[in-house]
Image 1 (cartoon, rainbow, N blue to C red):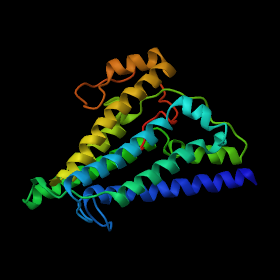
Image 2 (image 1 turned 135 degrees about the vertical axis):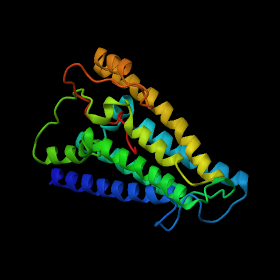
Image 3 (image 1 turned 120 degrees about the horizontal axis):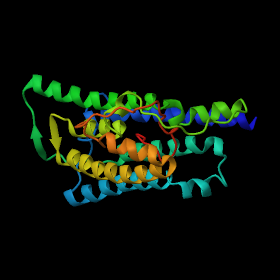
Image 4 (image 1 turned 90 degrees about the vertical axis):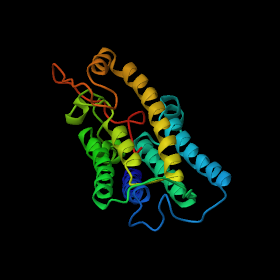
Length: 261
């Protein structure tokens, strides 16, 4: 019964992630969803900035702290290891949902593209960024990254395989295609407002910090394999191209791995 409950819990957490991810696409892109990054009540500038910075900071703290090994070791004293990842995904989704709900628009225009074809092209580029994020998660085991494999294996009494290192497809061009996809999605907009700029700027800083923390963890985990990979392949911009000399394996997704997150 406990394994069945863990499975239901994991599936509910995953479903919430899917809904949150789809809402994020509309929230940032400014379409379909009821509230976007540029809609809602307008607050005084200082109030809106402080409010939005608190929301972004809350997500950054939750996302980073719960991803650390030390926190995971403490957390799994109280939460079964089989649902640790699902719990991480659940909290990340709830934190993002809070951000969408409480975000205060700052409508001052930084740039606006009025030429329809160019605007469509830029919006399409943003959607391409979201597609890159999603594709990259499937390349490294989407369902394990979001906790589904863990609860399914737990139901069947199976252990997850040991982490391996490999570099599938996009990972041969940049080390962090998930983060690159997010940056494209956040910055490629035909209508950049001050609020959107705040969101994109802060998340970019967080991405760079997250990469530093993640690469430190991956270097500890995989040693020279990751160091050689880091020397061959650029971090975010595919300015140089490197391919592994022998079959390798990408780390099994865990709390220290990328996420939309």
